[in-house]
Length: 281
Image (cartoon, rainbow, N blue to C red; front, side):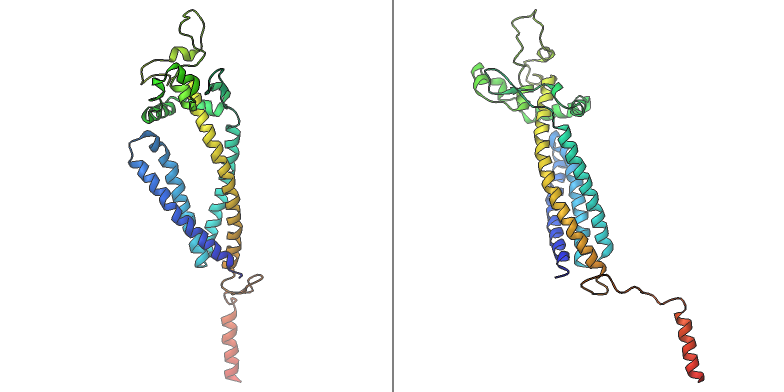
């Protein structure tokens, strides 16, 4: 029973080792795809997959074959992953604490405003290169294909996703019948062309941030579950590491009692002198 932790760590790492193969495969498949959105996700998937593969392999070898240095590497990387995941989770909750939609009177859907989101997200979405990638992704997904054919009655009865609300229609406050009235800047960005619509509007960028915010909050909750699991596995790994260090002496409990692995410097000289005395006398 004293090496039960080694068995548990071995099975857990065998499972994660096998689980990393589909993750790497998904990243490689996305690398072959021509869709912008999938290319945008391939690097994180490949990075996570290879990290899980290396860490799981080190933990499996160290626990099952009593290789102390492999378990030490496994515990070191695990500690780094726990710290990084904890920092990412806290950062995610801080960044996504602001935002959300505003109700529109008489409508089912909500509208989103860029100034309601955190400064870090606003700075990220306003980067021209980043927005060019996101805009191409929205165009490729044909998110607005159905919305542009809606009737006024559909706008009263049907709901919209954040991206549809911000990118596929002008803001509800726009009134194009009154040309002398001061209106929002997004009202002048709107164009009926299916390739333009409101893709350059701040409301479109806010809709994208709302989607990111919702997904990030879900991932942050999942991260908390993963943190609890990783801390539990790390604790078992520490026990397995101690068992591996005791494997040479094979003592089930306590410290390793083998404190000398090599003879002292004068052992051979003393042994030679002892043998010579017995020969002479």
